[in-house]
Structures are given as structure tokens and as C-alpha cells.
Length: 124
Image 1 (cartoon, rainbow, N blue to C red):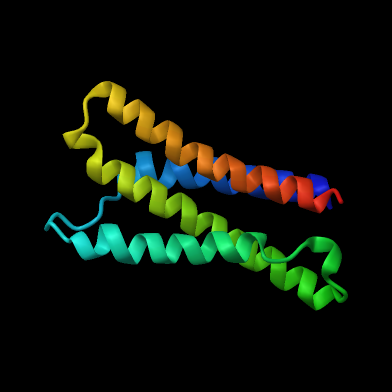
Image 2: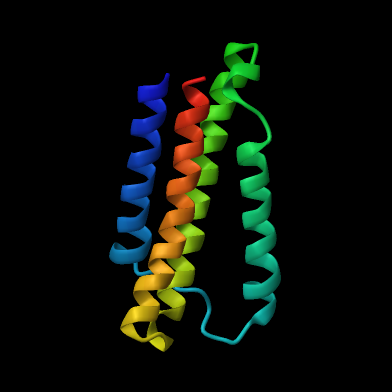
């Protein structure tokens, strides 16, 4: 199962970053919507991260729960890649090159940490 989780998570990460950040270059709405940046995105992301770490693969006792967990994990990781890419694309124009690199490093580190948690948990 561990190899499956590693391949699944890395595919979602690399394909998601390429699609959302580079291919589509998706950006959040242009209007200055502070509610979106300071309430909606943090609340959604917090919920995703909470669900991500709320249970372990070894606690699942049925095939249906394992399949549901894999589907939810894919959706949560894809949602996180989308949010990070959309925010990075939106703020990239107002950042200098160092700020742009640092924001990318922070965003991608969060995603890498989620993948690492998932890989470690799947190996238990």
C-alpha cells in the first residue's frame, strides 16, 4: 500500500502543480476580497489538514473505508495543490523574485509535509 500512496500523492502533486500553476495559470478573482484570503481559504485549508491527520490507515477495518480514504485523500491533496497554486499565481505579480521563491517554497513545503505524513502513515 505504501508504494501506491507514494505514487498517487506524487502524481497528484506534480500534475496538479503543472496544471493549476503553469498550464492554466489559475488566479483568484482580481477584486480585493480580504474575506477570501483571510477567512475562506484558511478555513477550508485548516479543515483539509485536520481531516488529513485525524485518523490512520491502520485504523480502517473495511475495504470500503480504505477505498473511501484513498478517494478523500486524493481530493484533499488536489484541493490543497489548487489552493496553493491559485494563491501563488494571484500574488506573484506583487512579489519580488525572492518573495516569489519563498512563497513557493512555503506552499510546496506544506504539500510535501502532507505527502510525507501520508507515506509514513501508510507504512505503519
